[in-house]
Image 1 (cartoon, rainbow, N blue to C red):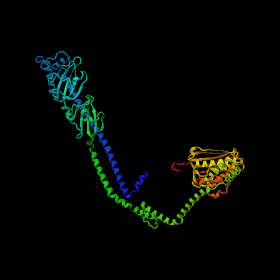
Image 2: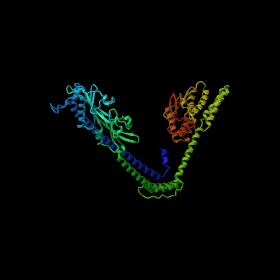
Image 3: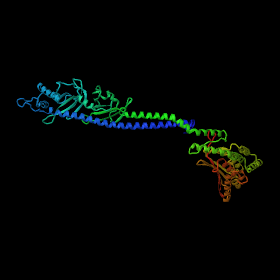
Image 4: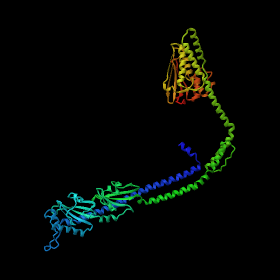
Length: 615
């Protein structure tokens, strides 16, 4: 986010205003365009589904009714006996001929065949001219056709159907022997005596009637209705070359036709597809139309939006620069004045006009600010800078001065030890004492750095404790219990040793060395607590309260003159340096239990040393 802001700051407000106007305009028009496209497409799609479903359902109904009328009209032919026309003198030879042959009462002779064929042809001529042929089939495989065809190919689809009670519709195929596309109605023939199925009547129909029914209904200019059978073959299509073919061998194979009411993309075009299924024929009448054709109004709306976008673009390009120049003129003048002030020229004048304009108000406020700077720069601003510099220097000097204060009591005791041991006996311990003393003074003599690691401070403390241990021989005990994980923490130099030295003076010496000092550490939140505990005589409640009060005064006044003359110099010294370095919430706390001992706690921020030597 900050990087983006810095990037924006590179350009002028005028440029940003032009880009902002263009962006808002484009986003607004784009949002309207997308919303219009979405909702218009949704509404158009739903309208198409409703209209197409209604149309395909109507077509299914018409085709079903047409087939059912055919079935009803054939009942007179296949039921028999036909009524006699000439009475006794002119008997009707067709009467009962079909039933007699199918039931097996009479064999199929040439005479009977001619009579049945003539009856079938007369039915076609009287009723439906679109019937290509009628075929009567007997259970034993004998057949009689209206076209005189004695035998048919075994691959005729209606030959493979079982003779049962079900009326079937065979989808489009090429008839034999005329090789024209037909559909076939397969109707069971019942005996008029016991209603037993004795054969079937096959009506081979040309597609003229279906073409007429389908041709009366259209959907769009290029949309089309297609009839697909339950076995996924084309029953009807405006393209006659596809009739009777499986879907897998036609362009329709690219569509998913299992679910109605879908929007599908094929090639570079979107198509709306729906269908209804007939309960009688089990055929689906599909409606397929390009979405673009149904959504012609969407193109008009899109063109209108593009025109609006172009007008808005021209408006922004032509008008916004003029408006931005007019609006930014006061800001440009203020910018020039600010540059003069930046170069140190406080004598500039800022012109402004009264009113509610924010830029004019900014000019007025900036002018007042320049006047105030001129009044304060000599007697306030420079004085405050000088005071701040003096305070920083004073704190730095105080920290270094405090680190240089060492209690001479320790120096005298150490020299006395060296003298006594050298006088009484010649032992290697004098070498150890001298070495530790030298290391001690080297550590304390260096003022820099102000902070060291806890490990360095403990190493320095260990040398001091070794000297004390030699002084009191076997009576004195010390233990430094600090977890290794705290060793990298940083603290003010010479913080631990003065506290331990104070414990030696007031706890170990009064008991002639028969005492113990324990140093440990633990973390508390983001702080580290260092504790120095002894089992000395402790102190009274009044004395403890006096020391606590003096530590509070030292922290509040933060000056060397407030603790230099105090008895507990080590405590005050360390406390003052920690407060100066880390703040008021850090420093020394003391608890004492009379006749049992004293615990001094040092609170510092828990900061570790990183690999780059920065904390």
